[in-house]
Length: 139
Image 1 (cartoon, one colour):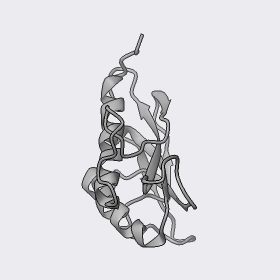
Image 2 (cartoon, rainbow, N blue to C red):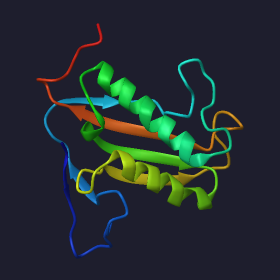
Image 3 (cartoon, rainbow, N blue to C red):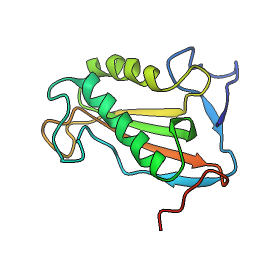
Image 4 (cartoon, rainbow, N blue to C red):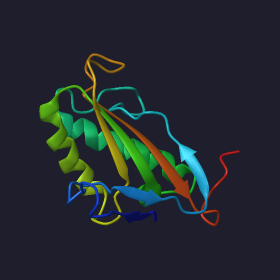
């Protein structure tokens, strides 16, 4: 699990669902492609519903990490792309379902004009570090 930190000398996360800094633990660094609300059959889950789409994004991340011995607690950084400022609080609500306080990754949120499909509302791009003893080589 990444070790987070803050300082009183800069603005703080203050329970917003992310950490100001994370010290990368030893292990295998894994960069995942941006995850969207597609099922394995490339059907959009949660058409028009940003919370349902965000949950599918997190599930996709879980499935990918599990495949190589990881889990969400291995995520050290996540970039969130969204299409409307009003969606951010809903995405943060869903993120809190997947990360326990104190174990959140660092986070960057970016509002964009659009994503790879006209019906995508959110895309999550994580970086994880999986310990050597749990890592499963996908060969």
